[in-house]
Structures are given as C-alpha cells and as structure tokens.
Length: 206
Ligand code: 5GP
Image 1 (cartoon, rainbow, N blue to C red):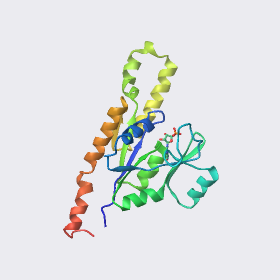
Image 2: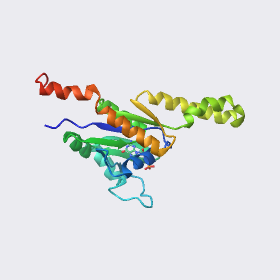
Image 3: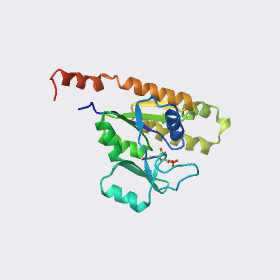
Image 4: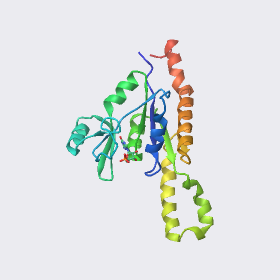
C-alpha cells in the first residue's frame, strides 16, 4: 500500500489574500506534486469562475444534504454562505499517496486540525500586522479608534497563529507562494513523516 499522502492546509484571516496566493501556486506548470481540492460553496458564481474548477457551486439544500451524509471533511459559514471541503476527493488522493492542498478560512482549518492532526498547517498573515507596532509609535498616522480596531484584529490574528505550524507573510504574492512551496518541500523530509515508512520496511511497525 502506498504511503499515505500529506494534507496541506493554507489558511489565514479574511482579506489576507489566500485565494490569490493559492492561484499563484497552481498557476504554473504544476511541478508541485500536490493537488488542489476544489471546495463546495453555496455562494453565487462570480464572472469568470467555472463550476468544477473554482468551486462546486451548489444550492443550500444540496450542501446541507452533503453535511448530513457525512460528505464534508470540514465546512463553515462565511458571509451567509457555506464553504466546505468534500471528503471523498481528499480521502482518495491521500490513500493513493498523493498530497492534497486546501485553501480554507480559519474555522474550517481548525476542524481539519482536529481530524487530521498530522496535516501541515500554514498561516498566511498580512504584512501590516508586522507594521502595527511602528504605526502605534507614530500615532499621528491613525486615530485612536482605528488603532484600537487594528490592535484587536491583530491580537485575534496572532492568537490564531499558534494553531499552525508555519506562518508566511503575504508581502508579495510571488514570494509568499515560493515560501509555501519551500515549506511543503521541506516538510516531506521531516523525520516524523519519513521514519514510519522505514520502520515498516524493517518490520518494526505494522
Ligand atoms: P471567496 O468567496 O472569496 O471565494 O472565499 C471566501 C472565503 O472562503 C475565503 O477565505 C476562502 O479561503 C474560504 N474558503 C474557500 N473554500 C473553503 C472551504 O472549502 N472551506 C472553508 N472553511 N473555507 C473556504
């Protein structure tokens, strides 16, 4: 039986540019050796989007039926619409030893973390989180209310980050995509992912 594939989860706060970075990763001739799992959603198709490529666009009833049937690895409601990861594709790919890439919002990512603790969890973070301190020092640039709002948002985001294995700052899309690919490449050689296979070969493990 093939070694089970690795589940890669890219997540991060809303508006950070997850979709853009994911598209950048998959836009080049895919030498990445990991496969994008197309999400299911109840939101309306945007111009230029293709059903079955960008998302599986379904009705609320269809989505709820999938939930009921245990067909979703995770799902979340985001701005009044459902978004979720169909379980079947992910399982089939992982069973075949292939790595699967999810790009999902944070609530869904936490559900996956519980179900698949040995997944690789990457947090995409906005560059201005890093500039925050400086902004607060230069108080002239923002009023107090804006600073407070930004501070609260930053605190939430920083707290979320601790549930992930890696953080990537989305300062430039191409660079962020490169960093993510590098992380994935390195992660494959982590001893914890590598050793069980060797142990099996030596008959030390089932
Ligand atoms: P959009 O409507 O802009 O395509 O996506 C809105 C949000 O839903 C983004 O943050 C995106 O990462 C997230 N999203 C897309 N697919 C999934 C999914 O399958 N599950 C979850 N939990 N979030 C998703």
